[in-house]
Length: 483
Image (cartoon, rainbow, N blue to C red; front, top):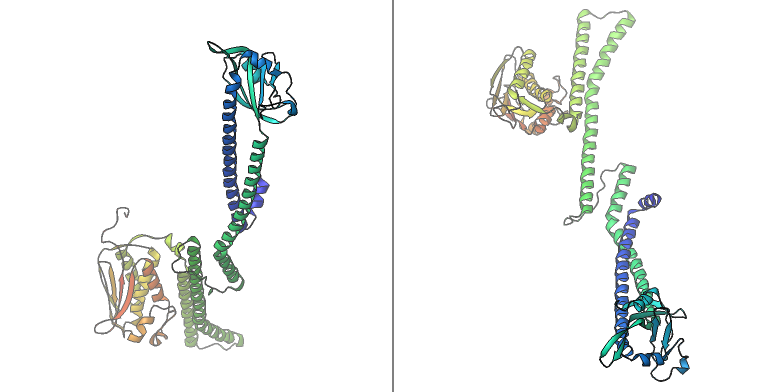
């Protein structure tokens, strides 16, 4: 059984569906055929039983002398049965098993224990059962107590029973023909059901074959542009699976394009500091190898440049790590945070980076769901951007009210044609390319704010400078679970 089940599971789906359909139809047809056969058998036997009861009346109403004078221990030969002969078997049996056969009987029926029991106890009800004659032919037998007629009425004749039987040859032939016909029809039905099930399975699984071919094509060629055609009005499971596959390949294609773009941009951004580092280190190495030391001022400048380039590389690598983090990694660290505390921590770092600037803050309580470290990094990036572009002695104004954080600087501002690109990865305005930075700061801000359900925008400020606006959903009071 286990081996057969394992073999069945190893078959293709269309073959399994065809076999299941054929098996279901076979079961249904078999049940109907067997039921039909038994119903017909019951009807035929019922007709025979009614005929036997009708024939038993005239025979059983004869007098004892008439019965005994018209029966013998053996039936008459077919040619000697005389007028009034019948196709019925008619005989009387005694309680001791002695059989008396009527002269017009078609033969002798083998008496059974059931028949002898009625002869011994005439109070029993008559029975209908199947038996055989002395030649082995099947017969239907009516065994009943024997009644005899007196002037005063009919009475039981104890110690004897009357057997009337009808041959079942024609009935059995009819039932055998019916069984053969039902078997033939059932076989044709099962074969037809199997063929139909195979055709239906092929038609139903054609989209699955197309999906399989598409998956194999993607695995073989890494071509994520392949799509499976799906009707717009189709809502079945196959259509949903095809749409899900198309959506998955589109997402993978977009992710791969972004990854390739990120790698290309990162390689471009890394090339400049690495080239500068290599040049400075080669100068220092050549000075040591030739024994001609560099002037102290030049040497300090080279070391300072190396340190700055190393800092820039570390910052770039950190930004790349932040951008490469998946949503699942971020989701594990989400919690309710006090945004005003996060902004306060970022302000302390901004004041250290721009000690010559004046940084004012007006912060109201606001609680949001976000990753603490990522949100603090985003606010620090906004403030660093403001510090970088603020003139010496300038002012940076920070305000948090009703979930809206604004950072306003008094720098040169951003041209209108550059505003659509400020949140692109590695994008830097022509005027800022000489300044330190990786071009990923605002991109990280945009990603962090969107992942927290908010939005960020940079707009020109009245009187010059830029205003960065961050809107985050939350509440002015902490939820009960926040201590």
